[in-house]
Image 1 (tube, rainbow, N blue to C red):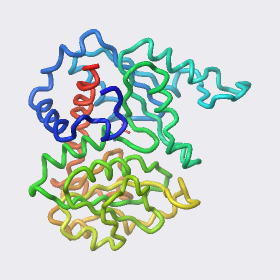
Image 2 (cartoon, rainbow, N blue to C red):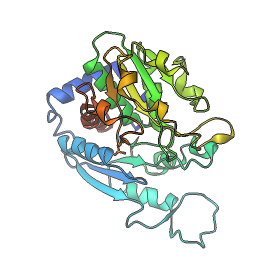
Image 3 (cartoon, rainbow, N blue to C red):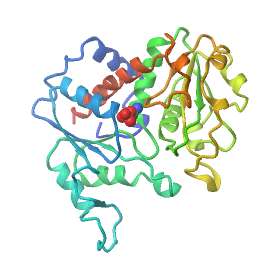
Image 4 (cartoon, rainbow, N blue to C red):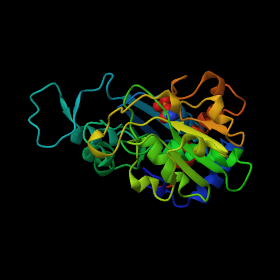
Length: 316
Ligand code: CP
């Protein structure tokens, strides 16, 4: 596998889920496969889980790891070609990327959406520049439109906890005052659409996601109807995608906060969120502290999804 930016890059999703089980059973089985190989993790945005879990995965495989935070200590990068660089940006990304590629064997990149220009964001310019100019296999640690390592970990978690072969999985929008990208929700939808689960998405009107990711999922605007009988409730905020509202916060209606009253409508559902989560905006203290809240095992599975992906990339 030379690149990993979406579920479509995996040779086989069922095999990847089987490898995840193997990695969990014996995390150090592949520790020789990464010997003398260097992983570079490039962060254009903050991270706790991705930063730690991907390093942990690489260490389990015997790799060396270098981490670069672009906004802390690196030169300010120009990303557009043709710009006269007479401002505060000292280096062009078109030199920086091949230089970074010369120091490593595999590169992970985190570069969020700017949320100003939908067309630009959905072209995944930074991620694609790394793929094109680094000369090395590249994987996404969350791009402008997808967060595949997160979605893979989410699916591993659902497979571990599901009580029926075809659980009802609910993706619910929940309020946050700051504009956040659609990447986690897009990606979650894309991965869940590759299963035969019953998949329902609920959000206020105006928060419709790109149809490319939603595909055949049921959209239910009636919150109570959406929650009824759910086996998993996956909460996430995202800013508006459609119309002229791209990147905007349309409202912060706490009727959409995941609370005990709504969870009581479910089939004793597990609560999931990718974290970090704003308590009492996205989810109440009570719900996230329930025994059925599986946000910690979900986060722990980030190291598993990363290890499966790195293992595949090391084969090239
Ligand atoms: N879920 C997730 O990607 O967490 P971080 O932003 O902390 O890496």
